[in-house]
Amino acid sequence: MARLGGPLEKKYFETRGGNLGGDGTEEENQSFQGPRWARYHQTKLANATFTMV
Image (cartoon, rainbow, N blue to C red; front, side, top):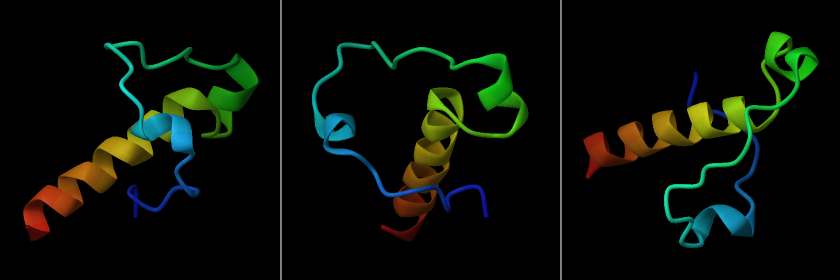
């Protein structure tokens, strides 16, 4: 279920040079929202994709 995040924005397909963005506010983090959780969903989606390939 962790791989089921919102749709990926175009910026996530660009070269970031290791810059993954901020961690979000405490309020966002407590409600499992914001950039920290977007990255978490992306990593779980990548793991699922890698496993299926």
